[in-house]
Length: 116
Image 1 (cartoon, rainbow, N blue to C red):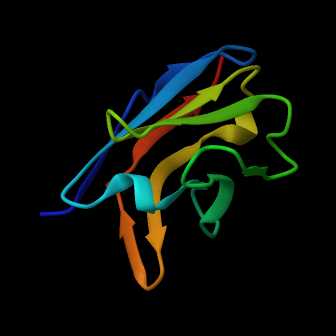
Image 2 (cartoon, one colour; image 1 turned 90 degrees about the vertical axis):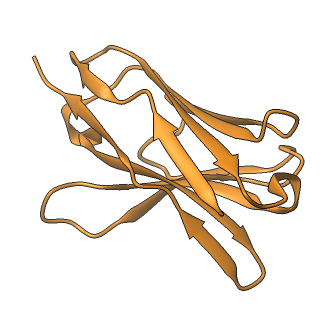
């Protein structure tokens, strides 16, 4: 059974940090490109960042460049998103996504709220 389980969301003040984790199971994790998406209330889901199978290539949305860092651990079948200098506009549900060819898996999401 394929599972992607996100964790690490929460409420944080502007300028604060959070680290999201996504634990994968039920598929060969190292074959999959991994991505983090987010969806704010009333808005479409948007791609935040992607990482290649080895971690050598990353691609960030302009809105998070220099503040967010994606990483992956193929041994532990996990992907992470370190988020620094958070802003109110980062408030959203964050989703983990795994892609390989036509296979496309999603987690259930974790809420991130940036507010004073």
